[in-house]
Picture 1 (cartoon, rainbow, N blue to C red):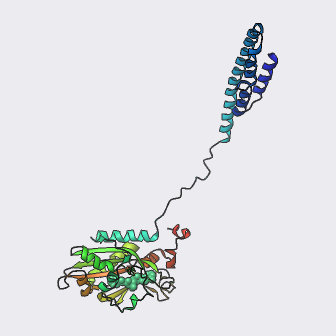
Picture 2 (cartoon, rainbow, N blue to C red):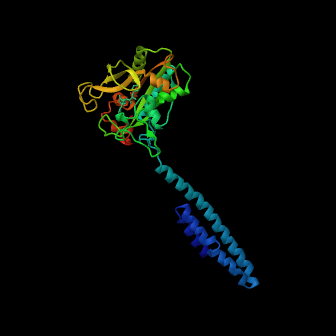
Length: 335
Ligand code: FA5
């Protein structure tokens, strides 16, 4: 018995972790442990030996159990101390950066444009990107033989609809939907089947503005457009107004912005002219008013079609429109 006790205590004292101690404990006291098998052998002894041996084995078992308990306390403490010594906190280490999402520059500028117009009492509307040909062209006074209707400029869908080539179809939809007088803007994505370059994309964004009232003025239209530009740029900007032709307005104008990528000295974005075509506009053609279900003898309107993608380029100095829809995170992370 003394021999066994010495052996067991020696093994227990030599353990250095709770896991190793557990192994030793199982080896001695577990179901198939050494002590357990000695206790099982008791049954085979003659009755006169059995009692004394049984007492001795139980005393041994108790002694081993106590030794294990004491050692467990010691190694648990030692392990905790070692861990604490290891895990010192270094407050000078850099933290783990939290990856936050960002808003795309187009979304940011749309939000700004919507803010400006909401303050002026405009509705904000949304119309379909897959549009009926009649709304994209016919109702806008664009005749069947107009070059814009060529499949080289327009994406036709298998069901006979088109991917809208501009946000102007919303003009007729808004007139049919709202009770005049009203004012509204409708931002959205438009599509054109055309070659791309620094300032032309096949998929880009516009914001249409429309005001319908008993009588409207070009002065009011221009002042709304200037409020829009100054709201986005937060300073005075340099523009020029020139005549422009669109079948759905009469008279029509083009408002150009001094190129902010090159400051007007000439670059691929402004095609070296120093000016960027940004805001075509005009008084709504009576035929369009009629297509909207209103009587042009009683109602007038002005409309503009802002080239939103180009406005975003000017706002942030982006030198190629193709960055906007490229889905490149290196670009998106800069905003
Ligand atoms: C139109 O789309 C007319 N619907 C605008 C309009 C509305 C005129 C209401 C009068 C009244 P335009 O094709 O010029 O017009 O396009 C308007 C603006 O969209 C342009 O000034 C330009 O800034 C932008 N734009 C045109 N084509 C592209 C393109 N491929 N890529 C990026 N921007 C473009």
